[in-house]
Image (cartoon, rainbow, N blue to C red):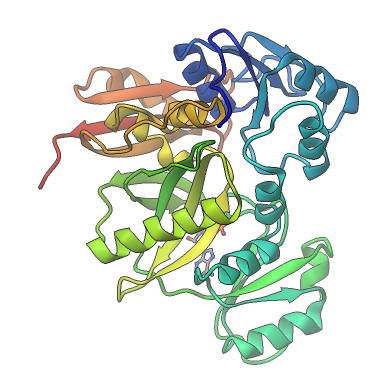
Length: 361
Ligand code: AMP
């Protein structure tokens, strides 16, 4: 067992968005320093970290500088180039492992991995051209969702097909930039949910309660805890999380999104090898937030208790929603968290708030 990171040690964070910001704040609470690697100046994370290295995520000199100055390196987004994670890991421990990035960066390898460890997903087929698309749609009865295999998030780079029994797909792949695609069968889910789980360096695992998620315009709108699911569904989600963490020999926090079918069974949609928007509720409704849990894991500290002390609803503040802050601040039982972004562009996550209430048994 590796010794825990000593007080005052530095944690390197690749990525400077709000997730990095909240990780840096959690690290500071536990007595650690942070350095953020992020090309954009005055990014949300750098506003609260001890230092920023302003360079591209794959700049070898910057990666060497980060690894040289950090006792451990982690990241806040899943599209960190795998070569960058491998480069870093030659001179510093990197958590979560590069393999987790590799698997989750490509929807095809992600679903193949999940199926290989016994976790069900929607049906899927790789699509390289319009003919593949026609064949795959035919196999799925004419309905499906076409997604880019890489770099898709918040519903970007996706096309929905319903009851397409004839052709007419010419030019579809070109319109998505001729990048590798995947067609997923259409899931008639009853609700969407996610679990946030953590695995420590010693292999211990802690799983937060499942959150029920509602999306608006492809962006997470609310996460409600508890989710309206039965105990078997909750246990199936915990079991899936444990399997994924152990198969990847994972260290850190992971977010896993699921579709809940009308019979209560689950299909995994995707996993993010990082802290996750649908886990922001933990900072208001648990003693140890997902951010602190991640810091504890990568620092080799004991994981915190993942039980919640309150029920809650977390809501994202997107674009002009930021104008709601004064009235939210006037409400009791509401914890507001803003990300320090100067400009409220449409679709931009500016902050979130969590409204807590006593646990209903
Ligand atoms: P994703 O980018 O994979 O997270 O997808 C964004 C949203 O699209 C999900 O949260 C679902 O609401 C919806 N969605 C994605 N994949 C499917 C699917 N195979 N069947 C039905 N809805 C889906």
